[in-house]
Image 1 (cartoon, each protein chain N blue to C red):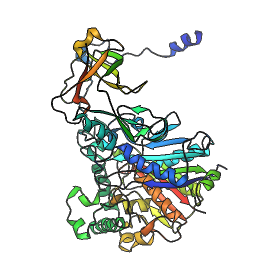
Image 2 (image 1 turned 30 degrees about the vertical axis):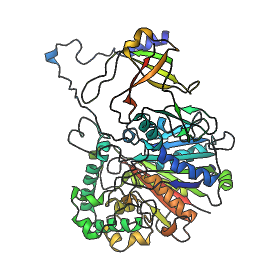
Image 3 (image 1 turned 135 degrees about the vertical axis):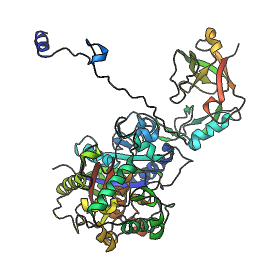
Image 4 (image 1 turned 180 degrees about the vertical axis):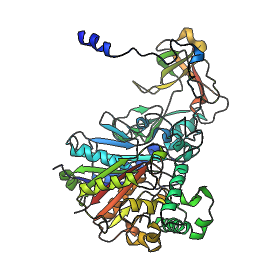
Length: 382
Length: 177
């Protein structure tokens, strides 16, 4: 039996449109210092943090080997330094594996992303495509999501009205989250009147551009109980990478998400995922993704996301009480923030958005065009 | 060695598709030229920003680790060795000596204009007044000082007329006769 791994502390900056006054390093320190303060940890070789995993992206940071800029800041000078250039929730998986292997007992995970630095976020995701077939025509993550949203609209009961409600609710939720002070609160009418970006995705359906950083401390069970009173246990993680070429995929099948969820549920010993979670945080980069990912997770009937929204499903199932990605987290960090949010809920530290007596939660991350890659983590407390 | 010789009998030597055939008989292989570029606006933050702002007044600032006392030039947020914020500031230079010089004979072109800086150019680690050991600043040395370059030669910065808070506000260092 592998050793249990607990999340002992989480910290994050606010997520704002343009943190013009800070470098990545300044944002990271805003996260690192409270993590060290809360846990009493340091970077000593005997009992301290044994591995620092940064999350960053070379193109967003506009430098190759982007972790070189972070090593000094994350205490990793002359130590074990690792990098995840993927959806940040993968760093949780990486840290879990490192601890379960027995190589280290305590891991720092810290991700940053500044979407405001480049002229356009779409210019960055444009570079995720090949220079031969797709880039010259204009593909980026927003355009790819438009293709998927079209296909999903045809295959499900989800309408423009449902999506307007998803966005309006995200704004209301964000009001209860001190990490998203700038998030716009739109009425349904305002969402419906916003211009098209990639039909049927409207301007207000897209997650806002933001800068920020998030981090957490992971520890092996015996250390975790020393470090904090109520560790949040990572009981199951699963991920799946779908085809890179959009044409190779059935864009409405949720293939990768179903696989990722099934793997996480199996590891966590969950046979019937419905009514299992007290709190759910999913990465909804675009409004249509909230109902679509819920279907893929097996938590909503297939093709019935619209009825779920109309029936108050998101509130009833405590989905994205933080506001979700629609309230504003940068790409790359969405899933790691979701895991941090579920952890705060399970630790009873979620403030105004706290779900009473939350014991088990699900965090989801997504990366790549039109949900190419999905990761699911199940988190629980004693 | 014998095994390797035998193994090569199973494989044909690789031939480029166009090799051995006249050009007109082969299908032309397409190559695409593209320039990748995303305009950036880099925040400097309160630490680098303070250092760069001081250039406007021709001042060179280093920051100091409160634990080990070493200076960082140019300044960075953290003393990596002590893992604490380097919070103290001291003015150094502007004069100093050459610690390690080098001459570079090429330069990477700007991806959009294709232009390169003048080459060759001399760069060096400069040990400025008030600094010790590895507390050196990397910058350029005036090219016309080429014949006089040596470790320990005394230098001073030559400032741009118009200073905007950039590392190039120092045009270069020059050797003091």
